Amino acid sequence: MSEFIRTQTVDHIASIGLDRGKSNAMHLEMVQELCTELGRAKDDPSVEAVIIHGKEGFFSSGLDLISLYDYDADKMRRFWEAFMELIYTLASLPKPTIASITGHSPAGGCVLAICCDYRIMADGDYIIGLNEVPVGITVPSSIFELYSFWLGEATAYRNLLEGKLYQPSEALTSGLIDEAVPLERIQTAASRKAKSWTQFDRHAWGTTKLNLRSALLQKIRDNKTQAITQVLEQWWRPSTRQILKTIIDNLTKKKE
Image 1 (spheres, rainbow, N blue to C red):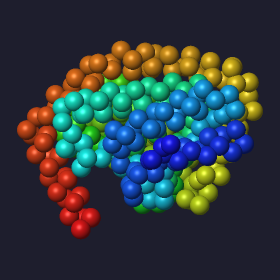
Image 2: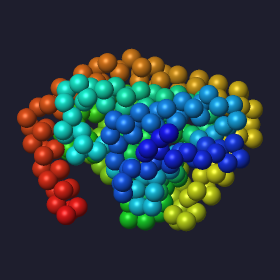
Image 3: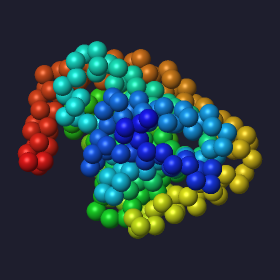
Image 4: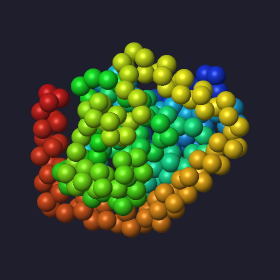
């Protein structure tokens, strides 16, 4: 039984809901549960497509820095191993995957979205993008490959190094998302897109998807060990710990 993931299958479409607190910030257990749910959807022949959604206001705020800050070295390594496994599992799923981005989706939330085949974002005062560098977190080359898969290398390069965050209209123009719709219509739009793809021959669609992503998936696989090593090395640097401490202090004050 998942504690942080809610899955409902209707009309052969598995809607996987992120459900942890207000902002769906990810810690080890949530990442593991999401990976497990995606594995079930992949192996279940009755599931023809997957929609990942958040809750009103947030798709996912990314990594739960407050929880992760207190992890010891062993648990931190297990987290990054699980997170990199999640990225590969989602990116390599041979069924249509749609991100129903119901609000803010920075950093790790954006990573989940760009693993999917299609992104629909709620129109409004929300942001999406990869802002890890300003936080002091190293961005693995495999995540750059994912970002540039949609944005193109030059744009992804510039945006990653400055930690650019997009409003929905900008994200749509750049190609980071595919649709921007009112929040109350987002699930309907996601289901419509899923059904438009499930009408095709499953094997032909899934095999073609994996063919088109073969170079990307190979890079994610090949980069996994190096990515984890680099991220962990940066994570424990005093300068990074100080940045994280400042962010956490500010987050804690907002909650009070």
